[in-house]
Length: 312
Image 1 (tube, rainbow, N blue to C red):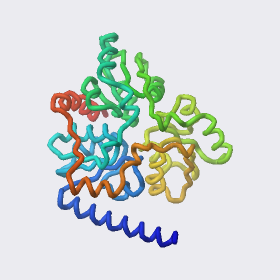
Image 2: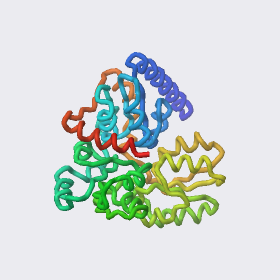
Image 3: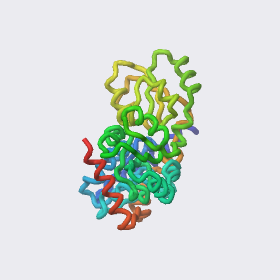
């Protein structure tokens, strides 16, 4: 019975993938998938990546329709950078708790308190917050962005863990918002120490959204893309991974002969996982749900994203 069920599931997935390929041609659409998506979503994506790469792809694509398989703020960023494109998100419930931890009113109040500071916003923020921001960044380019800003005082929103990590690479004064990623913040020193004891030959690679005391244990610290690249190029054959478990798809694809252990079974973002192939088909068939950003918000937010893309 189990074999029959697996066979039926494989057949359904094959049919869905064929339908997606057909609809993409009809709509002149591309699929962008974040590394934290389900394997089935990453398999059908035209581009897989972290927030920075996907923002670049959204800005440069010739497609008429962008299906953004990620969370809501990512779809907003795509729409801001490609205002004339139709941007679809398979499930509009795919939010980001960390992005919701900072709001426009709170940010404006902080800006009034520190009038000489420049605002650097992690891309994991709403369009409204980006519109109040001098420049955006991702975990891949945060250090470069901070050091490119023409100010000795930085208001950093919203991730306190990434902010703590970045602060070690700059002399600038950083006023750090108290937000965090629910998923990465779950990882504890105890989790890592237990895994290191179980796999003594493995290197620990960790995302800077994790707690500072966890990041300190890392053999390598970096963005999702940087972690994938490091594991591919490293001579080490075994890794303990301190980031969201969807990254395993690309890790295994790039390094099929290496072994990856996720540092805890709880490194799963439920918002990233709400998308599936059926929802991708439905959004391409119905052209819904579409991402909309008011023009006056989009224009201001676009400036902060474009400044980020110019940082080398």
